[in-house]
Image (tube, rainbow, N blue to C red; front, side, top):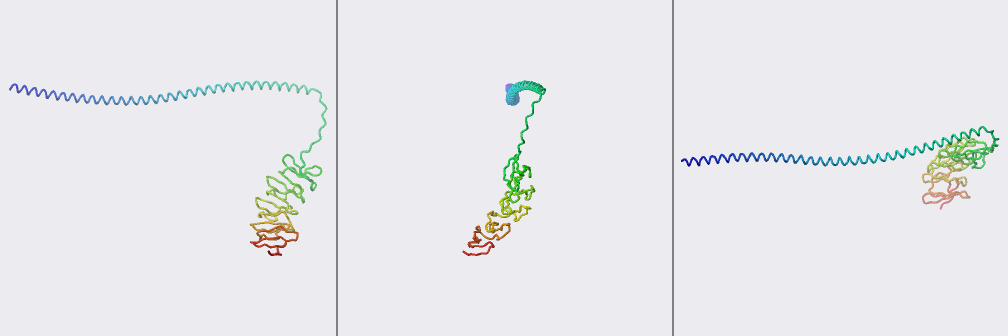
Length: 301
């Protein structure tokens, strides 16, 4: 019996020891896990410090580079300042030299002023300020003064002052003049009779002139600037035959008389100039005719 109880006691002691040992092991495991977590946290912090250290190294390198650039810029500015200072000193020396020369010249002028005045040289005849560029007409001729044109009379007196870009000789008491890149006309008194508003002006007949704006033509009276024919024709001939001049409007042709009035209406697809016999050939459609100066058909083809 005693032996049985001894065995039971040993078993109870053994069971108790195993339980205590298991508890100790569990505590050790818990401690190890805690230390492992602490180690991982420390390792994470170390990695963060490494990254921060690398960033600080890059920033330090950038600061070094900027410092080197600033040092270079300062050196360059210092050299430039030295060059400018040298130039300023040279200029001061030059200015002082010129000032001395001016003083010497002033002294010379004072000495010369004290001498008796020499006899004045005879004055040269006054030279005309203009250049004759035209032909005498209506007792006037075109002249050029500088870059402008005007007219003088036979006494070399200005009748129309030089004020135009271009001028032409007088014809039938009127001359063409150009102002602001446009043509107009004046009379012998210099009065503007046709405003300077046309691209071209050419003589038609008598006091009638052909004018042009853009691609269109008209007829104007030089006497008062009145339009004899408005500027709407694609062509007005300056060749007058049998008191007739060809004209064209809206792709149809006809004839003006020598005064610029419509003599034969614009209804032909093609016309030719009048001949010595007083007739001209015209075309309407595909048919040809000869007409006289009144527009009457005198011959069929």
